[in-house]
Amino acid sequence: MRITLIATVHAESGRANIAELRAILDRLAPDVIFAEIPSAFLADYLNGSHGTLESAAVVLYRERRPVNVVPVDLDKPGEEFFSNSEDMFKKVARTSTDYRRLVDQNSLDMLELGFPYLNSDRCAQAWEGICNEALATVEWIDDTKLRQTYDLWNQTNADRETGMIENIESYCIRHVPAHGVFLVGAAHRKPIMEKVRKRQVAGGPGVFWDF
Image 1: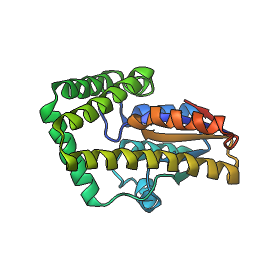
Image 2 (image 1 turned 120 degrees about the vertical axis):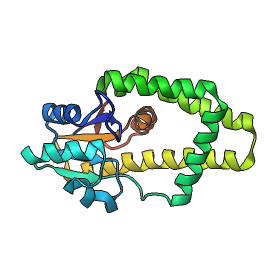
Image 3 (image 1 turned 135 degrees about the vertical axis):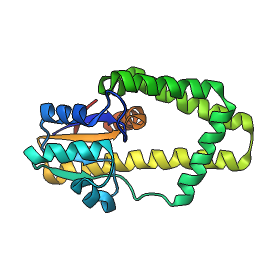
């Protein structure tokens, strides 16, 4: 069984748009789509009211090929998590010119280059640089609560990535699809690649991941 990871963005931006993602899905013709959503969000994802680029493209794809969509993300954290994380990144952006530059360049590349960029090593390195600069800035600010917020944000995302991998592997063991596609935000691409490779070394399930 083969799983193709497609790094995406949740809102349209230039060449990273609904039509482009639908064209990618049409070309790959998966028989199952794994979505970066908790199970509670599946109905909205399928009826077009979820409001993301991915869900809109999937709705269009399923009009011609009504494949199964499998939610693989963990349950959504509470509002306090998102509020604290947003405040943290605002403080980082106000403090670090390097962080702002890295974020702006990533946004520009995504706008101009679209999905080829989002699925490139260049994008993976950009996100690694953004996250490293965010951590360095949090450490420089030297505020205990801010560091706790960063650590929780980082651990939450790591847990989500592991959970999504495990949920995909579990589905593949039970259903053995010929070809699945995993739609996930570009910031998760490199961490997921690293986690998958560690699992493969440890003798994980026989799923072939195509990055």
